[in-house]
Length: 170
View (cartoon, helix red, strand yellow):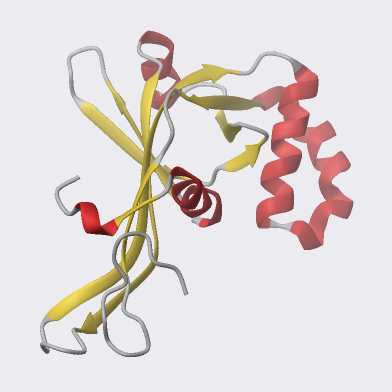
């Protein structure tokens, strides 16, 4: 990381990944072409999950090369530097590397889909069982296990206009 003064802890970075409504999952095709797609992930224990159709580009790539990179940005706010008037951006960001696996076990698929629904549509959980009965057979679920702790970075100003460096929290 170029600006080490903005580096945050792995725990803080995990929080960014968990809270971001979309996380870009990047992968690499066989010929080296990058492929990245923003997805709605949910975390269960130490793994992240997403769902998709039973066939498509993501699954084709992951079957051949399961290595992925996750990146997320939250609290992104264009602003003017309070002390120097520069145009800048306050942000929280995180990046993590992992391995993706297609989930085969039906109970794990349901657990993952429940986590996704609870995260994004908690007010509609009464319809979950009906939805699962209707669509589980045509839904793929992918599990991502991180291979190293995530890295986080932040640019944020305190109430006095000073940049909060070196992981300073308030």
